[in-house]
Structures are given as structure tokens and as C-alpha cells.
Image 1 (cartoon, rainbow, N blue to C red):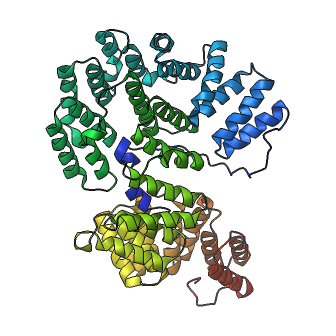
Image 2: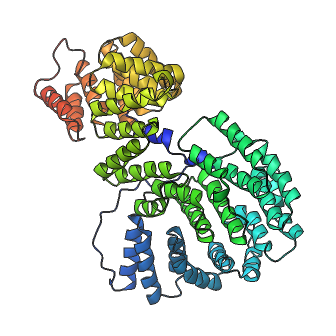
Length: 578
């Protein structure tokens, strides 16, 4: 069976991984809570608490914060409520609300390290450095915030203590298995803050020598340091090398152009700038390794704290907007991303993210309108047409999707992109409008560029088998996909179906039973198993599988075919259910 890839253009176009390195945000598999109307005046502790949980479940941090505040009025010493209140408000970037709750939580329990961090940041924001530093010093490197403490303590020391003290705080980053790039960039910035230009350049040069290996967010800091220290020629050499390594892209080119523009480079580093960069770096580190819901939430808190320290940190807005969208906090994501205006670095990437947000919010017309506007503004960029094609394909407007993909292809040299995903996407759309020759040509080119993608191999293999074009070749492709992903239920189904069509019915039953066990809610897999049961004479079990397939919302054509099987079974010589 074929499993459709959900979004190919975004894997090409959205650039959180380019900006910050690979990022994964955890998400919940729980069913969405239905939206209920709960009045803000709901009375009672339980009502306020449940309303807050409801708002959190619906990714509405602002409403959740308001209800938690109401609950705290009724139960002001409740530690769980205090923690939820400041943590939820911080995720929404509302530090005016987060700070009072964090202060109360910190005062009531020494175990509240996150609360203490929020309080320390509040002091630092106001220039109360002597109050912020001791709070951070009391935190353990083994605590929830321990991995970020070297950077935070270094910047807490910088405004009022000797440079040697500040730099010494960074030592854990330079240890084995540390974060050497962060050590170098923070050392450079702190030396620069103290007016030690030559020492700063030593660290900037270390990073400049490996610029093609760095994420764009670090390239930005190195470039800014060179510009402030009067070495713009190094910026040009760096950005040229980065482009040569990574290729031209509308999602990085505007950043690289901005890095070399003196008007866009901050004239000096303030303590708040430094602390903001430390928080942003911590957020990126968490996003790269976020394998739980809590770590993803904590990453958002760090990113919001970076923006609290430095509201002009546009690249943080871009990445945090994407992180919030990953957690389905679309309204909050849209609010952050919409602050990035046309002409600012990252604007096009932001518009693409906003379009994706709209689509996931069931606002498909708004999403398409935004993508079409981007394509009109930048007609030479294939990425916008790819995104339009992906959107139309997901909307099952396959002919229009092909037109959009064709326009994207024409914008590549010789009309030949190097991305296998683009050939794969257009191939899917072409197959759906029965342009099979063009479709198979695209699939084969995609396989040539990426011969070990199990989903791609399975897609082409299943299509060849299902249409009886070349069952033997199709089975070979499916078997290769199976070797790559032997636990994938869709690939198991494809293999079983190929066996069924080639007359190996007993083997097919075994495979299809495994496929149904892996994906019990898929109508096609259940239908396939029903067909196989019928062929070996297990008629009642076949009927059961077909009836089950009808309950799983098959498409109209498939529903009609299943109903026909229930009425008259499979024809005696039929070897195929279609």
C-alpha cells in the first residue's frame, strides 16, 4: 500500500535546521479536546484549574495563564499552581505575568530552579546584575537548567565583575563532550564586551575557519563580531564560502546579505544582548534534542526569554515561531512570526511557515492565498511554487498541483532540480491524474537521486504492482523497501498484495495479517486481507474484513467496490480486488 508523504515542500523550504541545526519538537498523540465555551468568570478553584488545563490542551497559553491566576487567588500557596502559572506564562512570552508567580514559587521552595531562573532574568532585564548573579550561582549544574548555566553565569558576571571571572564560567563548555562552538562564540562576545578586541578576534577566527560547518545562527554572531571589529572583508569571505558550500537559497541568502550590511549590525554588545544570545543558544540546544513534551516546552521558554532580553532578535522569532507551530500553538506562532516584516531577513521563510500554520488551522484558502502572493512577489524562486504544489496535492487538486510543480521545475538549471523530494511530489500528483509515463519517469529519477528511501521505493513498487504494469519489478522494489523498513505496516501490506497478485495466496495472507496488526485502522489494508481470505476459502473472515474496511472511511470509489464484494464476493478468476 502507498502512504502519502504529508508535506514535502516544507522539508525543502522551511529552514529551522539551516538556522539552528536539526530540531525536533515533541508532540502529543492524545486526541484533541473539543472546544467548549468556558466563561472567564468561572467560579471555584476546580473550575478555574480545569479551565486552565482545557486551554492548555487547546494550545492557548494566554487563556490558560488567566485561569491559573484566578486559581491562585483562591489557593495562593498551591505549589503546582504556582509552577504551572509562571511556566505557562513564560511559554507565551508574558513575563509580566510569569515573574510574580515565579517569585512566589522560588520563595516557597528551593527546588524551583525554573522559577529561580525566571526571577534572575527579571532582575537582569532591569539591570539589577548584583541580584541576578547570586540566584544563578545557587543553581546546580545537575538541575533542569544546568546545561545552560555556564553561559548564563558568564553574562551575569560580565556587567560588574572582572573579565577573568566571566570567562572562567564558560569552562564546562570547553570540556570533552562539551559545546566547543558555543564556548568559542561566547568567549569572543564576552571579550568584545570588555573591549578586548584582539582576544575576541582569536575566538571569532576559530569559528570563521569552519564557517561552512556552522548553523546560520552562529554565522550571524561571527559576522557581527567581524563587522564591529573592523574586518568586513572576513565577512564577505565567510558568506561566500557558506554560499559555495550550501548553495543559493532564498531562505539563507537574505540573512547572509544582512550579515554584511553595517546598518543591520548592532554597534555594540549590551549585557542584555549577551544574555539573550545565551538563552537563544540554550533554546536551540534543547530543540535539537527535544524528545519529550516538557523539553519542547522548556525550549520555548528559553526562546521567549531570549526575546524578552532582546526583542530585536529576529532570528529567534523565526525559530521560536516554528517551534510553537510544531507544538500546535498556531496563534502564538503567528503572533511572533507576523512581527517579522517584509525586507527583514527571514521574511520569506516566515511567510512559508505562516502559510503552513494556516493550513494546519484548517484555513486552506488563506494558506493558498499567502503562497500565491509569495510566488507573485518572487517569481524566480521555485520554493514558493513547490509549496503551492504541495498544498494543492494535499487538497487533492492534483492537476493544479502538477502545474505548480512544472513551474518550479522550469526555474532550475536545465529544468532539472537536484532534490529527489520534488520529483517524488510531482510523480505522486501525476499518478493521481493518470499521467503514468511522466509519473514513473519522475519516480525513477527520484530513486536515482535517493536509492534507499523506503517510502519512495514502496510507492513506485506498489503502483507497478497495482496497475499490473510490471509486477516482478514492482515486487523487487517493495522487497528492497521491506529490507529497509521491515516493521512498516504499509510496506508489509504492499509485499503481501504483490504476493497475492502473483498467486502466492498463503504467503500473502501471512503478510497481510501482519499489516492489519500494524495498521488496524486503514481501510485498504483491511480490504486486501479480506480479498486474500476469500481466495483461500475463509469466506466469513473475508466478509468481516470488508465490513470493517467500510467503517474506516474509505474513499467513495473504494466504498462502492467493497460493497460489491460484500454482495457477491470475488469473481472466481479474479486475482485483484480493483
